[in-house]
Image (cartoon, rainbow, N blue to C red; front, top):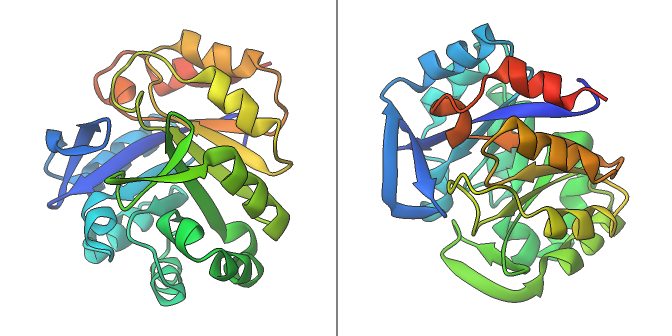
Amino acid sequence: MNPFTIFPAIDLKDGRCVRLRQGRAEEATVYSDDPVSMARHWQDLGAEWLHVVDLDGAFQGQSAHREILRKIAAVGVPVELGGGLRTQEAIEAVLTDGVRRAIVGTMAWAEPKVLERLCVCFGKRLVLGIDARDGRVQIKGWTETTDLSAVALARQADSFGVHTIIYTDTATDGMLQGPNCAALEKLCRSVSCDVVASGGISSVADIRKLRALGCPNLVGAIVGKALVEDAFSIEEAVRACEP
């Protein structure tokens, strides 16, 4: 993996590739009826990783696309998966199916002791997804906002030994208005683990802004709508990642 990696996003809902505006299920735009072909498309364009979210799993609390996920994992590009992974058994199942890294979110807020144990069990294959709005953690597919700050949760997870945190600013996700750099910088400087940015990236200039923050533990960015709608290419994004 390069020092800064671009993760094309594939969001699954009802068996199709969609994008949501600010995580709202009722504001879904369908981009493809064939998620496996979409995975191959990103592979052909040079993607080093794929970021896959099972939106139905996130809303329902359990994986809803297992067969599709197996096929995506078999394409050959390393896959990280989030959405509905709220038990150790669910994590083990997707890792067995070929997913490289499993992302947990709601569980970390609800059961921090379980998160601590999972960090030991799965090591680098476990990723914490922190979704936040106005600095407060959101859970259950962004349908509930807690009183816990994103920074507090990140620090706790860092103390448990989590290797990677994906930070999503839900107010910017899907809006193509740029990432929340201030929130990202604050979180990155609060922890020692790796951080991946998510939400709002609309141009290669946004990627350069993330790089310009100068946070050595900010190791990548997830890009969804901007890539799907050809605002820029993966090749252009990778060039923007170079020192």
